[in-house]
Length: 122
Image (tube, rainbow, N blue to C red; front, side, top):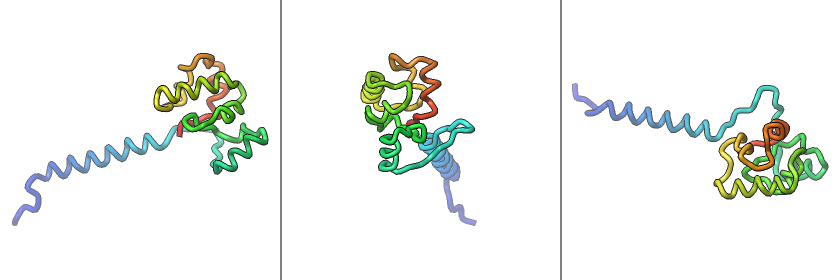
């Protein structure tokens, strides 16, 4: 019987690389949300309305796209800190984790704990 594949190990390696890349991409696009956190998906227009109505506790702000006005809606973030977040984002090519907020002057452990439920990175 004639062999269809001369090097079947190459096929196994290729399949392994495909599976590995899929798992890496899944980790990039999905983020861990702590148990008990309520997640509400809204359109950008609805998000803007909720923020303007002062209901920012209903909205999770994306650190990689938020404006100063959106960041200032979170209790514990003022205009100066919001600008520092945007500056950090621009200098570092965006946030990879929410924990990077701790690298910003003015955000200590206490502030981080109070604002982390209201922010995300993707």
